[in-house]
Image (cartoon, rainbow, N blue to C red; front, side):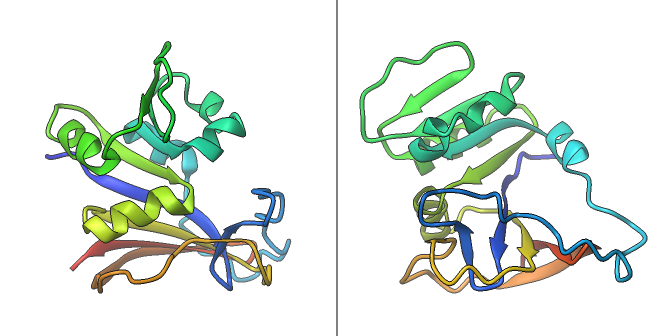
Length: 174
């Protein structure tokens, strides 16, 4: 089975993945479990499926890479930085680097964020699976998931989960 590039993140109902300051403390459910699905999403099981994480420099600067010490982490950046431990800084075409990585043996690849990084993968049409948690919040402003001028990508809903007002949708390309 070949490796997949999987985008997995949460967004507000109005399409933002972070507030204006990059904050995400609003990513919580509404506390009501009446509509919860019997089968529940497991982030831990998802992490077991992956061995590579891809993030932008803003995510790295927020120390979000520290959650992935057992994984290979690629950080897209415009700066020339020295790799260390499990962290690899890429100031080249990140899509090409990850597509080369995808050809190697291993588990799936997690596109962690942020929006500018995700946008380059969307425009390249190389994301195999989209997992989106819809948070029951309208932020009004912030950092959008989808930037402009994207190609049309037809998807097929594979699974959905409801957990305390958060709806998690897992799509594959059609």
